[in-house]
Image (tube, rainbow, N blue to C red):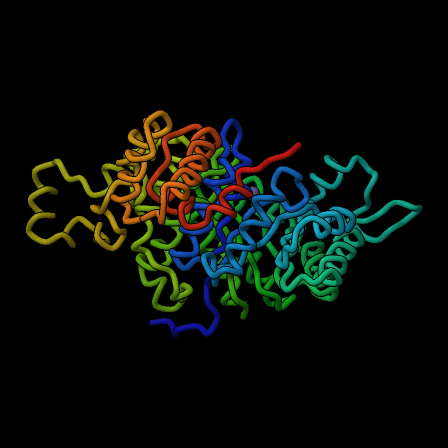
Length: 421
Ligand SMILES: [Zn+2]
């Protein structure tokens, strides 16, 4: 048996950033907030919770930072994504108090040539043209100067970037104060063998913690994430895997959160040497996956890892008989470990929609079932009003989670739903 390593694997969930960039899909700010609360409850290390530079995110971002201060979203770190452009960060810091950042810039020749059209050089400034390295270093310095506690630097398209340049880029980021490098397999180009070698080399050469950001264009996002994490740890640094709920994300999506956790913990011998952040509670998996599916309006495929309808279904005679005799015959892990078999999330939804038109009595009754009591009719009416707005805001019946949140944090709920152009 391989020896247990001292470095660990942490999870940075990017559903509220990469997940909402999915074409034709999005989340209401209230839904993004619920995801942050639930990710925190699940013991996730960090949530990439949005775009501080984007004006319509400002109220959502500030309200979520306030919820962190109040202890509702704690200890999970809330981190904002930005282009590695110093003035974007300056502008963002005028409107929000984001203290953790990931700053992104392309590093592959394909993208620096293909996207910047010769206006930005790859290496150092020349003939008045800015450079990838210079822009990135300025952005990191600016974030740190404005009080950032952690800054990750994202090498977009790292998997198609020549190693020599990638190492130079990461060393330069580290020299200017970056705390982590995000190795972005932006197009899902890596396989588990290539990413292992490349990330291990990067870790050995630069000695900086590495994030694995893997897309699923070849169906390898989860495999690449854990192979990359192994590379980072074998190279002597901590690994941070970027995930999304139900693998939501651009094109074929990102590495699915629940699959990544299971792959680390349950695949052949991996978890014996490579340890996942022990705060993670797999038991929240079912609830989170269901909520994300509901919020995105995207059904969970029947054969989805762990949370699909068929993930524990056995029909053929031999399998059914085997599973009944001893579940380990045909099941790698137990459905109870995922929190399956517990309450559904939307059972009061329709009643609340009706609540919009019924009196405050019916409304108090609905909340009574959630064990939320109002001190008087005035308070109940105030919450009912917010619930009506929330219904308009999410455009779907509210879940129990949302109803409870609105009743307990009405001030923040109101702020989150406020978008003033
Ligand atoms: Zn991505």
